[in-house]
Amino acid sequence: MKKHIFSVCLVVVFSISALAQNRQPFKDSQMLKSFSLGVSYSKTVSLIFPSGVHSVDLGSTAVIADKFSGVENVLRVKANVKGFPETNLSVITKDGKYYSFYVKYQEEPSSLTYRMEGEDLTGNTQTITQATGKTAPQIYLTASLNNAPVTFETINMNEADLNFYSREIAERGNKISGIGMNKNKINFDIAGIYVKDNVIFYSINAKNKSNINYDIDFIKFYIRDKKQPKRTAVQETEVNPVFVYPDGHRTIFGKSELNRVYCLEKFTIPDKKTLVVEMFEKNGGRVMTMHIKNKDIVKASTINFKAK
Image (cartoon, rainbow, N blue to C red; front, side):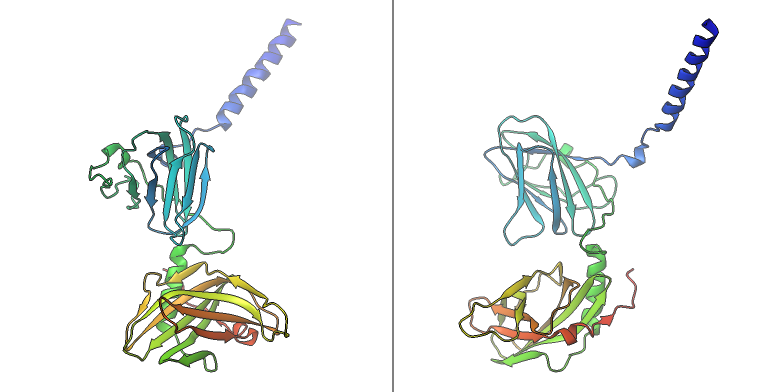
């Protein structure tokens, strides 16, 4: 009986030992550090990222976070309740990077604005100043910036890939005849349609032949029926680009032109519908419209140059 019990004990000991050996601890290089962030109930803290925010996860409902309307790369964070226990915040940006934060309550946040710059594992970022002009404590500037690659569900490329392909396409563009609009000394047309994986790149060119600058308010993509029966509502579905290159240029100066590449998730449309692209002028009436048919979309050129 004692021998049997001893054998059982040996089996248990060896099993525990084997289990412990299978549970390896993380290496220091595998543990990505997090930023420390203080937020308040009465003040909003802004995080400025070098790329657009793709998704946000909050560890607690005690903290709220959302993007500014019309701005992709600025996230505003605020306490939903006072004095909450420490929680966390995770942010994934459109260039495929992952940022992690420890969030704690501070009645007077150390800084109201943080600019997330620098990609080395030392976490060095540029000095951030508050609205009051005070420099944020160094503890908030030395946490490590996580540079883990992320793949999005909707597309197979991150923002760096989209930026590379769009830049190359902008340089290669050739006008597609039969698509576009020429009015009020503005030429609005397609310089090329390309496809890569599940993304279609639309290279759009606008040429201002007048002496009056054209300030772009926005460019809109939507799918609409080619012909609308009388006495029926217009049926249209807006399509939002996943990436625009270059995103910052919004003025077509007199006697100049601007080429922008819009990246949309891959789709085709029925022959009875058309993809409409409209460009609206800010504080102006020069609205430009063009229609892209399905037969033009399916002729998209394949991208055969590789991202660096």
